[in-house]
Length: 382
Image (cartoon, rainbow, N blue to C red; front, top):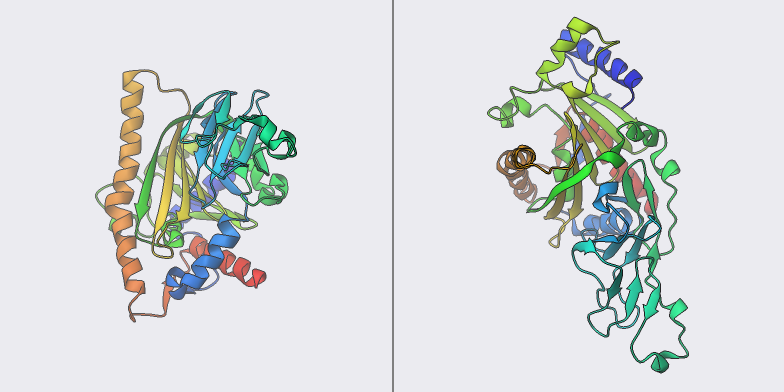
């Protein structure tokens, strides 16, 4: 976030604090409960948002050097992400062009990928380098059987893929002016520390909802983060379907002493970016949390979350590792023991006749904005 934007946000936040208000929507929004539990809607969402839509799959340091690779399957598509010898980020379907087996597992570093079925050998750039019994395939040139490449790009420290073969990816058009704001964080300089995969019995949108308001901070989180943040107080700004909310830490009062023009706001807030539809980028003090949220196998009643922690410096000392372990463990504790149990209970309640709609108040503008964007995208596809 550029300093001029920090100054503007600081002034807005102090206005909210002084006047005991927050960013608001024009009106209350009623969200149909069916959109969390309907299998038909879930199937349409999976196709539109997770098979054909640009997805953020990580920060640049996920592939720290040439020769590294990472497999990614949470979208429902088996993806193979590589950084080839030329340093370029590429993405492929992790499917051998012979009999369809996966050619790579997990992550690591290697010069090529050998299919475990018949030893077809693929380069980091997707080319089919060699295959046993070459003469048996003489009428099918190797040049025609490389891994199926997907549109991919690396921009301002973020890795993007369109998981559908034949689709294009124009990240400047996709992100608009938000791309410049994300660039100010210099995300390419952050280092991947650790990741966790969490499976929850709740719809993927309900899990995204967890991040979209601070109205619950001093109720649900009264014993954990309530004392750290102002509750029921956020800014809201949008770029197309993407948006940002910021919640101030109580330490923001320190800025009043030095003045908004000179102060750095970032140490005094949590900034949450929703990269539509399913990626949450969280700035916390000096590090980044990346949340990738997908429908689970039991959609619409399950979601899978890939949480990654990125740090400003590599964690090489024992004290640094303890520090980042504590940060990651706190985040997981709060969501697993406070947020997610409530969400899973709500998901069960959606299957009752208690109500046809849930309500987003005027003090929850990010929720109404997010769900309008989902509904509008599905309606436009009909």
